[in-house]
Image (cartoon, rainbow, N blue to C red; front, side, top):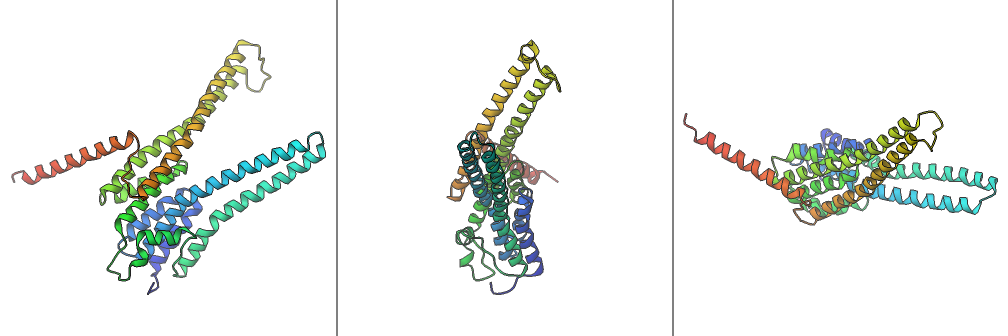
Length: 318
């Protein structure tokens, strides 16, 4: 950078990075900042696109690492617990040690996730150019920011759009709040770019469906639990031999089975969203199975109707 960013530019950059602290809810702020400053400030645009990438791609990597570490800790705990079987002192010591390790690991993983955006905000507040480890330099080359010398020249617009669209796809792993990324893109950039409009509309629709499945899993399990309590008697010792208790246990078992099936299916939709993001970054105009064609047809019909309406207005006699 040849000149220091203005106060307004610094504020946009700082807020975009700090929005990570909202854990999903802040994902719309980098898109707003990029949309507002994309042809006004290369500095703000790049920092916003980095922040968007960290909240979607970075969160995906972090949550997968988090789950893997938690699974490994649970395996280690049960192995240690089984080795001390029959000795209450060893079991108690192992449990306390595991709780301490688990708590420290949780705190450490959250710190690992939150420290980079805080550091980015501090650097940007000072007017410096910040690059996230690994992602920052790669993103700069992908967007063409490192090749731009004249303020009249701008980075590759197609790559900017593809990055934003891809991050919308990757955001499917962020329960509920991930939908804010494609929805905000649709609202702010849908009129400018037909590519972004299509990707944002299909991603929004896709994530609505995935979130319905996610919420449906909890509803089905809760319904089964309520049915169990209602039929067996809440706060009383159930008589498992009675017909009502048997019906309650049967309903709960069926609901638990449905909830388990949904729980196993949802990650497959997450994987498909990650694959869609990867394909978009590689230059593909990705279509979700079935949904993509339906959305494309609807957008084309609306575009055709809007064009026909415009011609009708122009040809109408005064």
